[in-house]
Image (cartoon, rainbow, N blue to C red; front, top):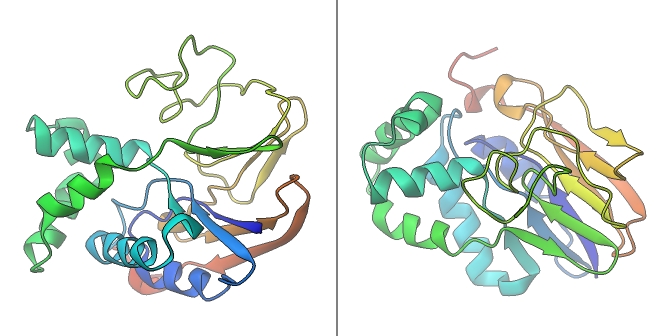
Length: 218
C-alpha cells in the first residue's frame, strides 16, 4: 500500500477532517506524525477522531507521538507540567473541561503511541533522527526523536518529519528529508504527502487552515 503522511495538526479539527477526506482507505496507510493537540481550538475532538480511525482501521491508521503528546502525558502523570501548560496545555485542559470526554482514557491511548513508522526506504517520526543524538529514541533528549531541531542524520532512507513549522514543506538533500509541518495552527496550511513505500512522492495535498480552528479568527 502507499503512504499518506500528515503533518502537525495541533487541535485544528476542521482542517484535519478536510485532510482525512483525501485518504484512500483502499490503497493507503494513513500516518500522522505527532502533535495532534494544543494551540488549536479542538484538541479533544482531534484525539476522538484519531482514536476512532485507529479503532476502525487498526494498522492502516498510524498516529505517532509528538512532543506535545509527551508533555500532556507528563502533566497528567506528574502534575503540574508548567512547560506544557504554557505551550497550549492550559487551553487543552479547558477544552476537555467543556466536554464530557474522558481525558484520563485519552492519555492512556497517547501513552501507546509509537515513536516512528519505518521500512527499508522510509522513516517517519515527529522530529527525526539527529546527527547529535546518542540515543534518538530517548523521549527526554533535546536531540531525540520528539524534540530535535538540529540537522538530521542521513540514515540511507527518506525521513519525513514535522515539529518545526515553516510556510511550505522543506526538503534537505544532505539528509534526504522532508519537513512537512506547515504551521496549520498559525493560520497557514496543513500539509499531507502521498508516497510509495519506496519513498517516491506521488502527490502533495495542502489544506488552508479553517478559521474555526484558530483562537484568533482570520
